[in-house]
Length: 211
Image (cartoon, rainbow, N blue to C red; front, side, top):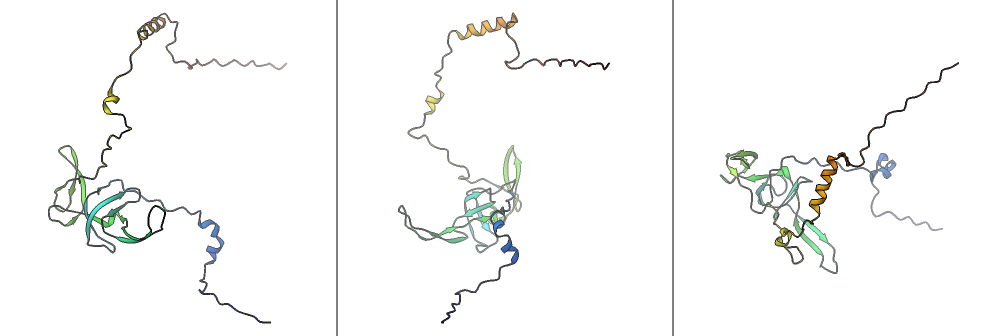
């Protein structure tokens, strides 16, 4: 008899017993919910500086904001490699794109001295504006922070046709209202809406006396 022993290519790592016993429950564990910021001070189009991470000290423009995950995407910063498979519609490959950065790791640029600063919301002349804590100057909102208003397409109803009044009140409507008012005055019609029934009186129970 010839015995052949085949050694595995990779050594089996030690797996804790608690993981082996609860392998069926690992998939049911829910992710920790993200606590959203109630007051959001950064907007799309702002010029910011990255304070922490591999792109610390670099500046760029915010191109996307995700308020559900408290992250922002800065143009040409925090770049990562992404592998895209080939499909009939496009060619695959390895592409470089900007990854999200946490909201707390970026700071807005003060337009007064060009340094990163913290900001706060204030009301000035009846308007809610962003004010720099560094210089006290108002930081205006960028031009592209709002979504562009959708234009009217070829299949959309025009504004003129929407505002046009095409309904005409029938000639007998005024007579019906007048008749209904007269019937209510003569108490032939109830003022209460249909379906509101009056509460019934409870029946008295008869008590039998014991002989």
